[in-house]
Amino acid sequence: MTVVPAAENLPRRLLKGTTMKTLIVHAHPEPRSLNGALTDIAVSTLEAAGHEVRVSDLYAMNWKAVVDAADFGAHATSPLRVIPSSGGAYDAGALTLDVAAEQEKLLWADTVIFQFPMWWYTMPAILKGWVDRVFSFHFAYGVGRHDETHYGERFGEGTLRGRRALLSVTVGGPESHYTDRGINGPIEDLLFPIHHGILYYPGLEVLPPFVLYGTDKITGGAFEDVAKAWQERLLSLETTEPIAFRRQNFGDYEIPSLRLKENLEAPGSKGFSLHVRG
Image (tube, rainbow, N blue to C red; front, side, top):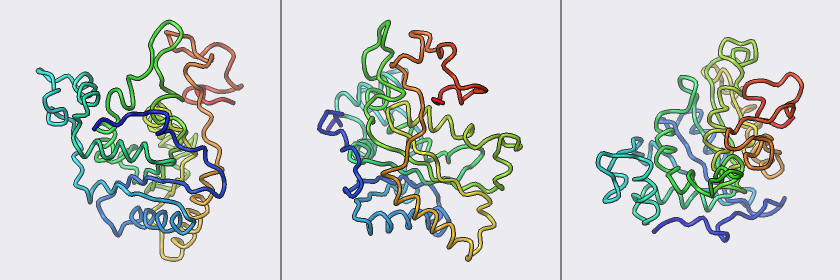
């Protein structure tokens, strides 16, 4: 059955003391890993606070990470063109059951937590494959009208608007490597393609990430501090302010060029930071 982003599927605005529905998308192959422990803490902490939690453990689910014609059945074009095939299958309610189930979880949730290790400066392939298949055409992109004044419902609008997302990321290197003068560049820049291009694009409000550095050297005593910091962050999800990304169709960008209008940026802003309100 097609997942329809109707008005009744929009989440309640979160109020302190209300029940929150959280989906955790977990991407690590070892259940006994630090990532596994962080997911377990998230489940127990949120449930103890009276919230509802669902977990998509991608490795445990043996998640299929590649898009191919089998995802679209009779709606797959020949030769295969992924975008129209994806949209046709979605519109007809013919996406595979695993993909449809994940879309239903996203519409159910108020908040989505992505738990993963940073591998080669990005998310693990299995998680990117989850995005490739679940964020289908007409569900996460290709929605809304496109004309001279409105370039689709995206970047602050879209099917997943009103929901929140949080990246919980473990990083092997020390924090100094991931700063403005660090050799890897600022962590905000490394995560920008995920924050802005994957999560904000279909309307999710993106919370500042929870990042753990030097994770290969965390000992038992240090883990207690990690667990406490994670619990505190989880219990503040309802009141944490999202990253102030600029919305596409609300005057900051020229349409159809989608270039930021002159003199809107904060002094000294450049690169990715141009797209965050000062």
